[in-house]
Structure formats: C-alpha cells, structure tokens
Length: 229
Image (cartoon, rainbow, N blue to C red):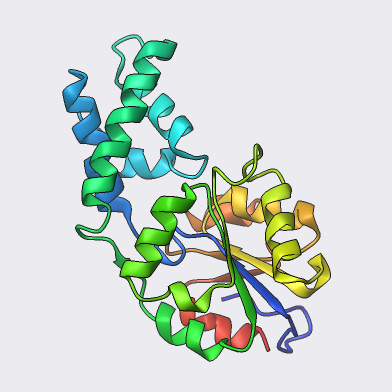
C-alpha cells in the first residue's frame, strides 16, 4: 500500500469511484454476456482474462474488441455486425448482470465509514445498468451522483466525466480523489486535477497502474480508511 509522501492522512471532500473492478467484481457476468453474444454470432468464446482486458472504455468498444479478437484474421467488425453485437450483449447483460456480481470485500463498510463525504461513481458502464447494479447490491444510497458512459459524449481517460461528477457534487478538483482499477481512471482523474488512487485487485495489473503514477495505490478497498480523512 502506498501512503502519502508525508506519511499523513490526506484531507478530501469528494470521493469518486470507478465501478467494475473497483466497487464490484463483475468479471464473470461480463465474460458470460460477451460469450453468449459471440455464440449467437458464430464466434468462438473468449477467456475471462481477455474480456477483462477489453473492459473500461464502454460497451461499444468492448463489443468492437471482442469481435475483432474472434475474427480469424482479426478484422474489425463492419457497422452491421457491430450493431448486432451491441444489441445482443445488452440483451444478455440485462438478463444476467447480477448472476454472480458482488461487492469486493470491505466496500459497504468503507463507504459507510466515509458516509459524511460527498461521493460519486464515474464509470464507462451505462447509467441504467449502473443504477440497477448498485441498487440491487444495496449501496446506491451512498452515492450522490452517477456519471456513466452515456452521460457525456466523452469517456475516461478524457477528464470531462470526472469534472462532471465534481460539478454535480458541488466541489472542486483539488478537493477530490478518483479511485479506480484502470489506467483510464488514473489518467482522467489526474487530467481533471484530482488526486488519484489505484486499486490493484481489479481488472488491471499493478505494474500497468504504476506507469500512470497514481498518488496512492492500495491492494484492498478498506485501506482507503488509512489514507483519507
């Protein structure tokens, strides 16, 4: 775990969280939905690790990457195939998004620990899916806003989703920390002027996250309680 350079806890007012790989372990349900889509399009299935590597830039990019990876010549899909894939994955994910998805250890307890902080979710997942998941998992009440992949034209690593959440929470970037498991989370947070905290238990390896020079790195969610006040 990386502490602040002074060794002291860092005061913050706003906490922004990625969803997949940060708050929730959704890898199996996303992989199953992708593979059901591929099966209907006569494509071979993908391993969970491969799908996890495709997550983070929204569903359109996920489908594009999955279809490209399963083409015999690795050709990208044309517009019609891409549209078919999007329709299929939305159908399958809507039906099974909560089959095995669960909170990572310590998430609910740590969110409650920070109950006096203004909190938001900044994710590339569409808002409707995000709200269904956090509602079903019992954590919706901890969040004051959700900025999803369909909220703005831009997505992470662009800073605008992070800035939009900060505006909705009524604060400023220097009061905020962006917490996530991907390079996109760290880049969007730092470009927005917020502090960044990488979690190493999600979809990306610690070595890749370290290349983005996050302000903090943690290997378990409840370590946030030792970093911020």
